[in-house]
Amino acid sequence: DDVPAASPSAAAAAAASVIPTVQTGLTPIQQEAIKAAQAMQLQKQTVAQTAVSAAQAAAAGVGFPQALGLQAAGLQAAGLQAAGSPGGVPLGRLYVGSLHYDLKEAELRGIFEPFGPIKAIDLSFEPATGKSKGFAFIEFADPAHADACQKAMDGFNIAGRSVRLDHP
Image (tube, rainbow, N blue to C red):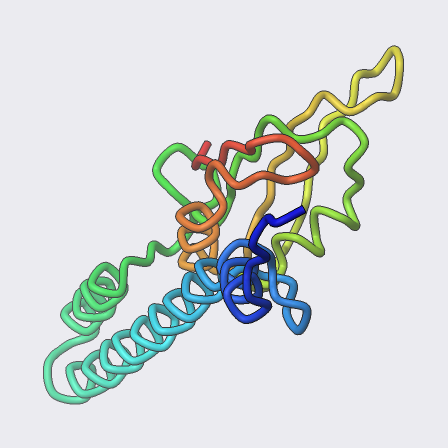
């Protein structure tokens, strides 16, 4: 009967640090990861624009092969490659494992799209039963968004399961 009640403001502050915000549906940690991904994207765009400008200047004054070399160096400095990773797997592709078997593609899109535009979601199903195998591959349009998503969501609890995210 004489149990002291926690103050409403203390309870609200504690809940705010764990429960996703109503406005965005994301925890503060996830919101920070999205901001970091957006900052990385801006930085990559700036580096890429600088590389293109340098390549154009080089093409005007040097030679076309040298200009191509500068452009490739600019892309590498931005952390980008022309066509996927060396193994042929797109750079923005993530493996998402330990998913709840009842999750649907639309639900996965709603969970992961706040990190950036998604090109494709491949949810794996058991052919004989049509039930989910509990894993998916999500391909982001930008590899930086995939990296930010992996950092923020690896180990995150979705539908009662701690999901694993990694690059394939």
